[in-house]
Length: 424
Image (cartoon, rainbow, N blue to C red; front, side, top):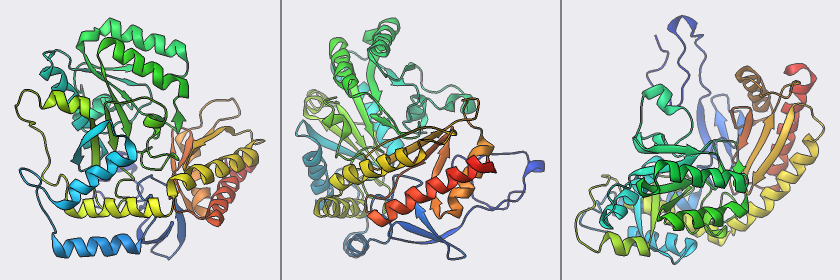
């Protein structure tokens, strides 16, 4: 029998006979960039991009308290409230005036799914209902719902069976030859059958792998050539994490839809957003009809209050610029300190998205057991991070101090040293 009644996300499911009764690390408190377990052991938290402002932000907590007392819930189906209107405008302001409407979801997967539905609806409104297909890239992660999971290249269909039809994976573009393959795939599948291409500007789950700058404009040109929409999945990269409000906008992708998620409320409320360009809006509303999609908690007033306070703090403390500057310093120091270790294949990052790739003595990917031991040493050093497919992935809060950044560097070096000198 399971020792817990909770089915955890992304959980390994061994046969009952092989379960060893190992308990999960139980966290009981968070403050600043740190979390604490039952023994009051402190860990620098870099596991996910969600707590962008760390834990226990008093300004956000007070804002949430006031909002719960004033208006704890309001549906925005056939009604509205002041905070959802303000938040939509603020997101457009920090992104681009090309956008004119925002749809709010409960999480990143839902926001991607919304973008996919909007893409299909747009083409149907233009008299091209046969455009129902989607192309994403190898190594991309877009979510785990039926549609978003169908464009996620993580083997989800191998677990749950066939996903959404007409979802294809193209090689992740690293040069112009890969983009030639993208165009060839468009032609093979039928350019008049494709609704949108989904772009993850910097792959998060895939190991903090950035798309080359030159590829963004070329992908836009290809989509323009064949009348295909572009969805920029910035659930992880957006709103300061990668050192800019929007990577896709900075790189001139000019996406038709942009999706924000993790950093939007910094973990203080479940919420994500899909931004829609005015060009799309004009078509969507041209002929009447109905948008048959929504969520009961869409645009929740408490979630909007959290997001507005997050934006206030980020702007007041200039955290987007700090993410770019401090991220570059951490990356340079890690690259210098880890350069001579044989088990380190590559150290890379953008803003406060950081990764270290590891290899065996035979230059092959390390196994899961290696990652488990490494993560144990990292925990000894007081750091929680994510290890996946030979990659250490780290998302320090944007509020991390210089001293805490150095603590992170020293902890990673400690864990690598332990693996190199016998622990691996």
